[in-house]
Amino acid sequence: MPQRRPVVISGPSGAGKSTLCRTFAATVSHTTRKVRPGEVDGVTYYYVSREHFESLILKDTFVEFTEFNGNLYGTSKQTIIDQSSKGSIIVLDVEMEGVKQLKKEQLNSESTINPRFVFIKPPSFAVLESRLRGRGTEDETSVQSRLERARDELEYAETGVHDKIILNEDLDKAFRELEEFIFDGRAPES
Ligand SMILES: Nc1ncnc2c1ncn2[C@@H]1O[C@H](COP(=O)(O)OP(=O)(O)OP(=O)(O)O)[C@@H](O)[C@H]1O
Image (cartoon, rainbow, N blue to C red; front, side, top):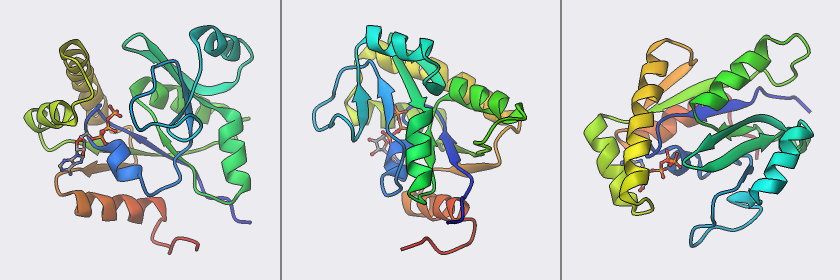
């Protein structure tokens, strides 16, 4: 079975990563954050306690992990292995620290992951803020810390580390661009 390179999606919180990735088989990350209404363990995330997450870090379980707003998030190596063995294209949704860790891992001669990096860019800071508020999932402190972080994410993207930057203004257009990039011009396997 041909193995395609994993695609790493990043971008500020509220830029539209989850919305755009909904139809792709994104990897399921681990998190210590609380389950939001409508989320399902093992589908949206693997929800674990901080103690459990920390024990997994010590066991070198994660290809990348980060702490955000007091919660830990990480992608386990096993998730990637399981998904590639099914022949799926792996889509990882990570934030800037995760991108940096994956970039570092890519330089390692033993690395087997070798992903391609996409950045989802909001049309403007004001639109990002209104999407984040409009989503209705964050309290004011969380909105503020996400916006603060968004500045770093946007600055990091300016350095040209990503293989592709997709402007998420018109959702359908952004989705088509992402699909084209993920499947690299080839039709998705049915
Ligand atoms: N192109 C778009 N036009 C209008 N609204 C959009 C667009 N893309 C996403 N949204 C809306 O913006 C909000 C934020 O999107 P989403 O939750 O996908 O962001 P995210 O990047 O996954 O954030 P997080 O990193 O916090 O999970 C959602 O309410 C979504 O419906």
